[in-house]
Image 1 (cartoon, rainbow, N blue to C red):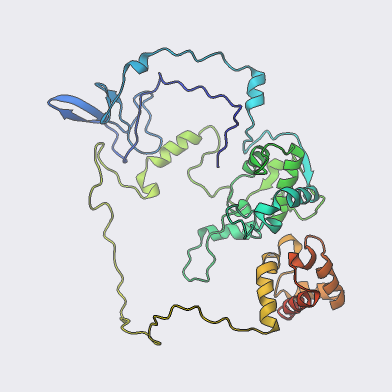
Image 2 (image 1 turned 90 degrees about the vertical axis):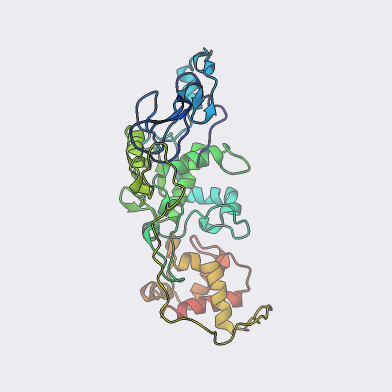
Length: 397
């Protein structure tokens, strides 16, 4: 994601660099196209203004005889002098520079998990859902968590072989390499109706709450305590599980050159090497080997039907209804153990909970406890809620 502060000034010079257009991956030496013995255009795998390879692995079209590739260019524009204005003062640069880099320095501020939860419920919940799980009625805003980030990061390399296999889970905790993007984006772009309205303290508090929801670690310790404070001193100690999950390596001063080296090896991303002026017009893919089904399917049992009515919904018993409520409103936390919730099927965890007595468990659930809202955020009756508790307990014996 990318946002540009409307106060930041960018000076663009059109006089130094030749106009270039990137295309297919080519060889290192330039080739040319001629019309009636006159060079029409030159194709090169390097830039003519610095001699370096094209950064995206493609080719460039240096300006020759008034053309950049097949496109005519006004060469006078290259020699026209422009007044670029005065240089920005250090104070102006400091005011405009709202970026937060992955390696700091981080802005001054502090906030706790509890403070972040309160701010989240007031300003973020409507779009991002309870506990950052995503709002089903909105749908266009991302979920901020799906459970333990370290476990979910493993799904990024999963191959889904059956419909039940869990596919890649890309949320803040499991996918993002650096938390600094969240700190910067929340401060400059959130909440959506009122961007830049949050203080740095509020922003730190919200990120602390996100760390808690994703069960992330700071300096080796999982953020569990609602009194945990995130600040400019410990922000750099957040341990993101997917920090090394991207290629090429763009961190540090060699980021551009690492990108250039990576993109100029076509096999790194499944491309082909062509001549400078080559185009892949046919046979661009290797022959696909088709695996034929050995036992041909010739009929269907039962036969295919042209009936288009929806199947009748089966009336389930109390357990079926309780299961439906659980899956809709409780599974987010009790399947993953998010926010300290005892997980479904974990006998030891539920044995500890049940030491209070079932009536106390009912009361805690109905009235809400810790991160759990009353009745799990549902509007069902007390009796219906108790049946959901019974369903969970029975599945955890």
